[in-house]
Length: 383
Ligand code: BJ8
Image (cartoon, rainbow, N blue to C red; front, side, top):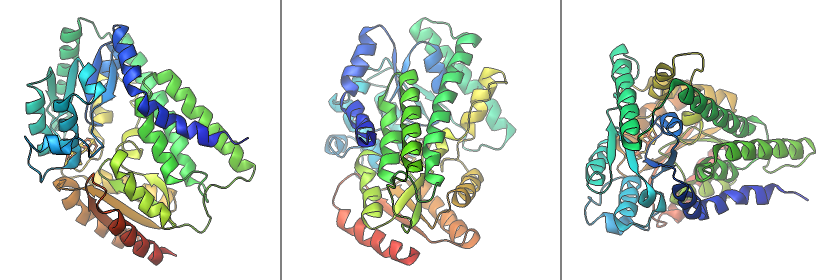
């Protein structure tokens, strides 16, 4: 019997059971730290005996409540996150002992000021440039400041040994995810884009790291076995799509559905949650704080200026995954990704000679028909 569908479905269950899971940890005395971004050095939280949970909202549901305080013309991720926080509808926010944010985009950093009125909040000053030596000096100091804050708030000591242990397990998790998403390099891909997303997005709800790593490894091995036995999940003729841009998950799955219902297959996610967050490991041979600072500052998010590392990463991925077309998903009012889209489009069209399209969307389902029409027309060019 093919066990893969039920193995993928376990990620939906993990999402639904998130409340029970985090409550269990809380009751066992663990500290819960809410996070909003890939730049948060989660190893520090782990080394302090705490658990990191993502507070990024991906649902349209609390947006009307958020708009009482926030402008309507703001990124839906920010409005959704804030809406969940003020309505107490998010168990992760409710149970968080501390919230950690970074000065990434303007909307997020101003939201943190408001969240600081509800919960203990620590904001890391993220440099907006990841090539200058001065940026690294500042970022290292910010990592030390976060370490001090966690130690003070949680009455613990983050020793170098604990930090090394945490680095190791987070690297193990990244390696397991890399092995899983690199299945998309096979042609035809043994997994659909929706399945890849289910694992990458859903794994954040599996809070026991060791269990999560073992599960991803088992899933990857089973998919490989099925593939070697001739099972095919996607068509060899389906155009191979790379998705880039803002974080994907929850309400924005509609974009992936629009691609795959129109005959494409998403084989690679460059977004946070995908390659951008996982491809670089923390160097285990270096002094831990230095190594953590280097890894996180290298993340090629559009909040960096310049952000040439993103183009370098895209170039590599387009070649390695034999990409036929690039789809950039931009959340409404995300200025950094929206402006950077011009450079990405030029690079993909001119340097890589493949088609590119971007869509700006929000968390409502109002544009599903329009997304499908646009994706249908785009994919037609790729056959
Ligand atoms: S590292 S992508 S998680 S900042 S909230 S920038 S969509 S306007 S989420 Fe992000 Fe960290 Fe970068 Fe990744 Fe735009 Fe919205 Fe801001 Fe956003």
